[in-house]
Image 1: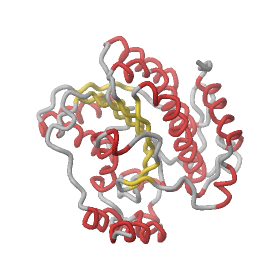
Image 2 (image 1 turned 135 degrees about the vertical axis):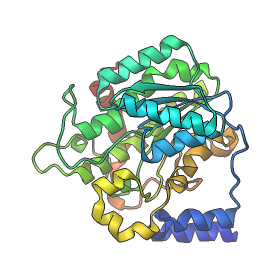
Image 3 (image 1 turned 30 degrees about the vertical axis):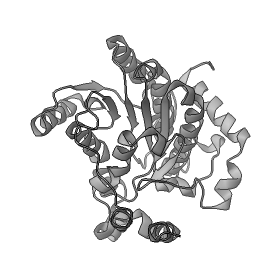
Image 4 (image 1 turned 90 degrees about the vertical axis):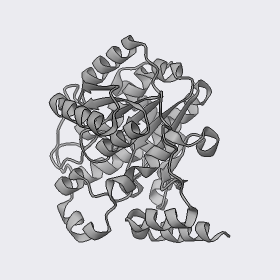
Length: 324
C-alpha cells in the first residue's frame, strides 16, 4: 500500500485528526496536491449561495481568482453588493451578479431562478453552501421547519428549476456543502422536520446534512445522462463565523486545530476544476478523496432504497414539484 494511502486511512480512522487542520496538511504533503491552473474557471458561470461570509465567501474569492464569473445568492443584498465590489477590486472579476434570496423561502428560490433562466446564460457550477445551525425552532412561510427548508428543500428546488441552465452549459457541476456531523444521524424522513417540543438545532442540522448527501447521490444518478456531475463534500472542522456563533464551546476547545477557510474550501475548488474522469459523479468527499457514507451501524441500516424513495417523495411534496 502506498504511504499516502496508508496515511489517509490512518487519519480517517481517527476522525478527529482527519477533520482538523492536520488532515489537509498531511494529505497535501503526502499526496502532492496540485493547485488549479491559472484561469481554470475562465468562461464559466458559478452560482454560490450563502456567499457573504465563511466558506461561501472564500469560495467566491477563489472562483473569481480563477477567472470564473459569479452569481451570488445572498440574504442581505447590501452586504452582497459590498462583497461583489471587494471581489472585483481584489481579483479584477467584474462579471459578478448579486441576487437576494433566503434559501429556506421557496418563493424566493423560485423568483431568483426565474430571473436567472430569463437571462439565458449557461450555469457551469451550482454550489449549495447557504445554511445555519440555529438553536431556536422556526418555520418558513410555507410552514416547513426552517433547517430542513434551508438545507434540503430550497437547494433541491433550486437544482430542479435551474436544470435548463445547467444542461445548457454542456458540462456542469452541482456541489452540496454538507457536514461531518451527518455521520451521527440516520436517514429518517419522518424525523427530518423536528417539532417545537424538544427542538435541538444540532440534531436538526445533522439530519438535514444526512439528507443532503442522500439527495446528492439520487441527483447524480438522475442527471448523469444530462452532462451534470453532482457531488457532496464536507469541509472538516473549519473556524468560521457560523461555528463561532453556534458552537462557541467547541470552537474554544479546538480552535488551535480548526481548519482555515482555505483548507475547508479546497475540495470544493478541486471538484469544480478537476477533470471529469478524475472525479466522476455521486461522491461524498473530504480532502480530495471520496469518503464512506456511514461510520455507524445505525445509519447504515437506515439507508434503504425504501427510505431514499420516501426522502425524494417528501422533498418533492414540500417543494410542490411533480415527478418528471
